[in-house]
Length: 248
Ligand code: IPE
Ligand code: IPE
Ligand code: MG
Image 1 (cartoon, rainbow, N blue to C red):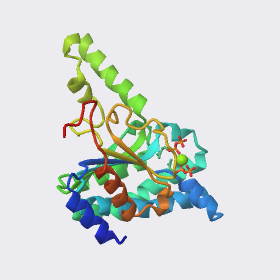
Image 2: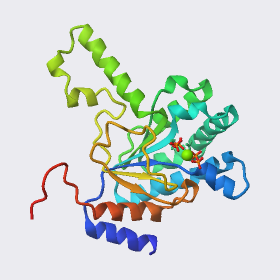
Image 3: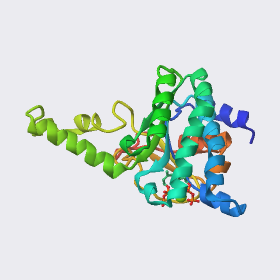
């Protein structure tokens, strides 16, 4: 089905997911299939990021959260880590202007202290250049993992408690969520993982409590807006019960 037909179906169905998160996986396998170095797969992944941003804009998704680099990915060979950081900087230099014109506000979330100086500069650049974008909030999760995010939030809460600023009774979901990287955002309605793997790999562990999961077999570099639309159509057929009973 063509992209415009899929989009029309999405609009007819209504109930557009407000927040979509994607575990962008399969770059290495994409490159291997072509006898290319892994970095070639990562580079081609930039095209898929553009596809998903434009698809999200077309579909009226408000928040797109992309898992770009996990805390555990620091354990990969140094050459691959350096290539990934270089590609992040390339992404910023190639895409910032367009993202700004399209009204995308970019936030880079994760343990950013681990980044080198020039990558930190790029992150600051894309963040300030796109601030105020009204059409799509794009979260790039870099040096991120869910467990570390939860621990970091707990540490903040403990410090507040130690200073007398927080009572044990005030430690609830709302105060805790305010200490997460995703403070102020609704939980993802839909989480997509590409490359056919059915696991969360430490992504948004707190936030996915009632998120609908969609596993796509396509490898990330081949992910297109049509794949995003198909995931949204799949989501629109789900019966979200949040532990309750559907009436009617
Ligand atoms: C996803 O692709 C990108 C990152 C994790 C940075 P991979 O590099 O994990 O590719 P595969 O899973 O080895 O194919
Ligand atoms: C998850 O993919 C991390 C990102 C997509 C950034 P990985 O490829 O690192 O995860 P595993 O090793 O397959 O669980
Ligand atoms: Mg992988």
